[in-house]
Image 1 (cartoon, rainbow, N blue to C red):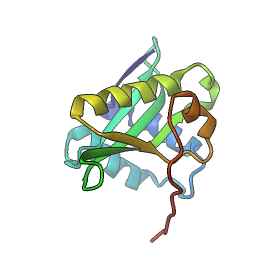
Image 2: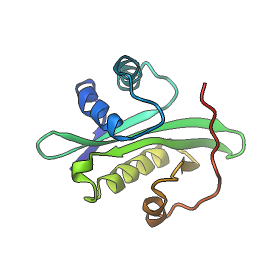
Image 3: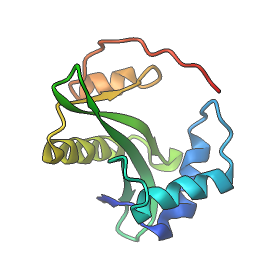
Image 4: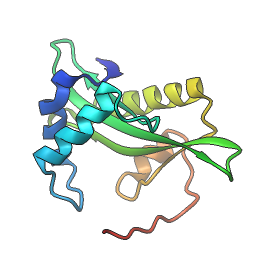
Length: 142
Protein backbone atom coordinates (compact mmCIF):
# COMPACT_ATOMS: atom_id res chain seq x y z
CA UNK A 1 0.00 0.00 0.00
CA UNK A 2 1.26 3.47 -0.87
CA UNK A 3 -0.16 6.87 -0.02
CA UNK A 4 0.31 9.50 -2.71
CA UNK A 5 -1.17 12.72 -4.00
CA UNK A 6 -4.39 12.20 -5.91
CA UNK A 7 -4.33 12.38 -9.70
CA UNK A 8 -7.06 13.04 -12.27
CA UNK A 9 -7.33 9.32 -13.03
CA UNK A 10 -8.42 8.68 -9.41
CA UNK A 11 -11.71 10.58 -9.73
CA UNK A 12 -14.03 7.57 -10.16
CA UNK A 13 -12.47 5.65 -7.27
CA UNK A 14 -12.55 8.64 -4.93
CA UNK A 15 -16.17 9.42 -5.87
CA UNK A 16 -17.11 5.84 -4.96
CA UNK A 17 -15.46 6.35 -1.56
CA UNK A 18 -17.24 9.67 -1.04
CA UNK A 19 -20.51 7.83 -1.55
CA UNK A 20 -19.57 5.50 1.35
CA UNK A 21 -19.12 8.38 3.81
CA UNK A 22 -22.78 8.61 4.73
CA UNK A 23 -22.44 12.37 5.14
CA UNK A 24 -25.29 14.85 5.41
CA UNK A 25 -24.94 15.75 1.73
CA UNK A 26 -25.72 13.35 -1.10
CA UNK A 27 -22.70 13.54 -3.43
CA UNK A 28 -23.50 15.14 -6.80
CA UNK A 29 -21.05 14.02 -9.47
CA UNK A 30 -20.82 17.37 -11.28
CA UNK A 31 -20.02 19.24 -8.05
CA UNK A 32 -17.55 16.53 -7.04
CA UNK A 33 -15.81 16.69 -10.44
CA UNK A 34 -15.40 20.46 -10.17
CA UNK A 35 -13.89 20.28 -6.67
CA UNK A 36 -11.76 17.23 -7.44
CA UNK A 37 -10.30 18.82 -10.57
CA UNK A 38 -9.44 22.02 -8.70
CA UNK A 39 -7.69 20.04 -5.97
CA UNK A 40 -5.63 17.76 -8.22
CA UNK A 41 -4.89 20.21 -11.04
CA UNK A 42 -3.61 22.94 -8.74
CA UNK A 43 -6.43 25.40 -9.46
CA UNK A 44 -7.32 25.37 -5.76
CA UNK A 45 -4.80 27.75 -4.23
CA UNK A 46 -6.05 27.38 -0.66
CA UNK A 47 -3.26 25.04 0.40
CA UNK A 48 -5.60 22.04 0.56
CA UNK A 49 -4.20 18.64 -0.35
CA UNK A 50 -5.77 15.32 -1.30
CA UNK A 51 -4.07 11.98 -0.74
CA UNK A 52 -5.14 8.51 -1.86
CA UNK A 53 -4.16 5.06 -0.61
CA UNK A 54 -3.35 2.74 -3.50
CA UNK A 55 -2.81 -1.02 -3.28
CA UNK A 56 -0.17 -3.05 -5.13
CA UNK A 57 -2.52 -3.53 -8.09
CA UNK A 58 -3.14 0.22 -8.40
CA UNK A 59 -6.64 0.25 -6.91
CA UNK A 60 -7.50 3.29 -4.79
CA UNK A 61 -9.07 2.16 -1.53
CA UNK A 62 -8.91 5.29 0.62
CA UNK A 63 -8.49 9.04 0.56
CA UNK A 64 -7.87 11.98 2.88
CA UNK A 65 -8.67 15.63 2.16
CA UNK A 66 -6.95 18.25 4.31
CA UNK A 67 -7.32 22.03 4.31
CA UNK A 68 -4.73 24.46 5.62
CA UNK A 69 -5.38 27.99 6.88
CA UNK A 70 -3.43 30.69 8.65
CA UNK A 71 -5.05 31.35 12.03
CA UNK A 72 -4.35 34.14 14.49
CA UNK A 73 -4.79 31.93 17.55
CA UNK A 74 -2.32 29.20 16.55
CA UNK A 75 0.67 31.42 15.76
CA UNK A 76 0.67 30.25 12.17
CA UNK A 77 -0.83 27.54 10.05
CA UNK A 78 -3.55 25.17 11.17
CA UNK A 79 -4.79 22.16 9.21
CA UNK A 80 -8.14 20.39 9.34
CA UNK A 81 -8.53 16.80 8.18
CA UNK A 82 -11.84 17.44 6.45
CA UNK A 83 -12.60 14.04 4.97
CA UNK A 84 -11.12 10.58 5.31
CA UNK A 85 -12.59 7.40 3.91
CA UNK A 86 -11.44 3.82 3.55
CA UNK A 87 -13.32 1.35 1.37
CA UNK A 88 -15.64 -0.79 3.49
CA UNK A 89 -14.12 -3.93 1.95
CA UNK A 90 -10.64 -3.22 3.37
CA UNK A 91 -11.33 -1.46 6.68
CA UNK A 92 -9.32 -2.67 9.65
CA UNK A 93 -6.10 -3.06 7.64
CA UNK A 94 -4.41 0.17 8.86
CA UNK A 95 -5.15 2.18 5.71
CA UNK A 96 -6.76 4.95 7.76
CA UNK A 97 -3.69 5.07 10.00
CA UNK A 98 -1.40 5.26 6.96
CA UNK A 99 -3.46 8.09 5.49
CA UNK A 100 -3.42 10.05 8.77
CA UNK A 101 0.35 9.58 9.13
CA UNK A 102 0.89 10.83 5.56
CA UNK A 103 -1.26 13.89 6.30
CA UNK A 104 0.69 14.54 9.52
CA UNK A 105 4.01 14.27 7.66
CA UNK A 106 2.85 16.79 5.05
CA UNK A 107 1.61 19.13 7.77
CA UNK A 108 5.00 19.04 9.50
CA UNK A 109 6.73 19.65 6.16
CA UNK A 110 4.55 22.74 5.61
CA UNK A 111 5.15 24.10 9.10
CA UNK A 112 1.59 23.53 10.30
CA UNK A 113 1.21 24.09 14.06
CA UNK A 114 -1.82 21.83 14.64
CA UNK A 115 -3.98 19.29 12.83
CA UNK A 116 -7.62 19.05 13.87
CA UNK A 117 -10.33 16.59 12.92
CA UNK A 118 -14.04 16.37 13.67
CA UNK A 119 -14.19 12.82 14.98
CA UNK A 120 -17.59 12.19 16.50
CA UNK A 121 -18.01 8.82 14.77
CA UNK A 122 -14.36 7.78 14.92
CA UNK A 123 -13.14 9.13 18.25
CA UNK A 124 -11.55 5.85 19.33
CA UNK A 125 -9.52 5.70 16.11
CA UNK A 126 -8.06 9.16 16.71
CA UNK A 127 -7.52 8.47 20.43
CA UNK A 128 -5.28 5.54 19.44
CA UNK A 129 -3.29 7.88 17.18
CA UNK A 130 -2.63 10.33 20.03
CA UNK A 131 -5.30 12.95 19.35
CA UNK A 132 -7.08 14.65 22.24
CA UNK A 133 -10.57 16.09 22.37
CA UNK A 134 -10.57 19.86 22.75
CA UNK A 135 -13.73 21.23 21.14
CA UNK A 136 -17.22 20.52 20.01
CA UNK A 137 -17.94 21.57 16.45
CA UNK A 138 -21.19 23.18 15.44
CA UNK A 139 -22.50 23.49 11.90
CA UNK A 140 -25.00 25.47 9.88
CA UNK A 141 -25.87 24.34 6.38
CA UNK A 142 -26.55 26.98 3.72
